[in-house]
Image 1 (cartoon, rainbow, N blue to C red):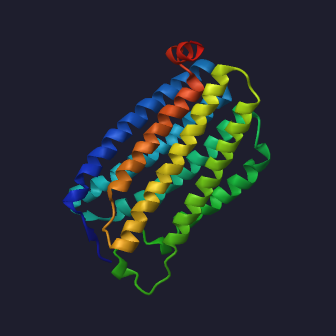
Image 2 (cartoon, rainbow, N blue to C red; image 1 turned 90 degrees about the vertical axis):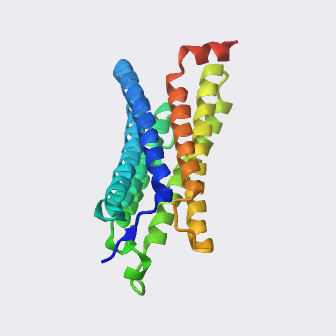
Length: 249
């Protein structure tokens, strides 16, 4: 089996991933400390969301590190892709669990979402995805990568839309400005994650329609939206004093 050569144009993305991994780790630690302070389920669930997303970033960084060192996208890189996508799946589920906890809505769909999520997770690791393998190596063979990717995106979008709708409904039922602001921040964090996946769709379209080698500018923008999600969801739960003072004014 052959390997795709690493291109120097991807090097900035490697350093970009390193930076984002550091930021993600910082926010994850802050969220963990907030859970240790409160000892209630909601911060724990959001901490797990941050852990899984940061782990996805670290996994992608490790995969790219192998390519940078060896000059080829090899075995570690290939496993880093489904691993990162799998971590995003877990993050999605615990994100819904977090919102279900703070709004007391949506508990009836937790089990179906969990079962479907496990199914998509298994699908991502099947050998017929050919993650990171040059197209000529699996030409004419079964290739399910497009279906795995679409399943991940659809699963994520269903969760984000459900959360966004739940936040909007909860906002209409509260007169408290602080609670309303927290729900509004959570709503926009879901918009950020929807745009996150939309950027990856854009990158895929560049590959399919314009014969782009991948890792386009869409990937850079995608992870910016992920960091926006980190910040907005953190603020929605923690509500630091400076934000509360601003709301009350």
